[in-house]
Image (cartoon, rainbow, N blue to C red):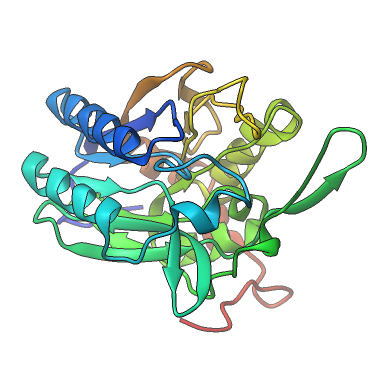
Length: 283
């Protein structure tokens, strides 16, 4: 595989594992502070966690929901421009035309909104005796794929539960994405069981980098996030991982490594498209 001439072979990615509180203004201030810290450490793409401006829960979504543009996304736009970075804004509860969405807004180095990803697959699960949760009680699903271009590579977006659906990652890989970013908040049941496994699976299957940005763990919250924001390389190796506390995780993304993996094990050109296919139903 030959890298496109426009790309830069390496760049620094940062994942902000924010300790989220019930005070929106504090969450915004501290998130922007950690974004500045990441940029000062050389990060060119920075991601915040899922639901970074509010507690995670169906009772909180209506209370904290905003329009886009709105208070939270304005702050993200300003700090992206100030730091001249690509900022993946985790997610916030978005209000639009009487519906609520779990939405990730991405801003470029000029502060402009590049893409808005509404969580496609809603987190409706029931593990008896452990956890029951229904995002669909208050949220509506998105219905579009979300990618954006950088001078480094194309990036594909999902939010948390979206990561369980291999087809989404395959579509993104087909569209040329070399990095997939999933802001997410797995819990103490699904986190230890599947968080890292899913990331490594998506990375190996598609020979891409996969990154996840989680909120830090708050054992007093009604929904306790697993934490462990992670970066996995195209060989399936965990190259960076946080613990459960607030932290900024850094990883130097090496697109030469990606090209080498694809050359050594050329599965993308060996697919039997005469026998099977994964295809998008819409753009």
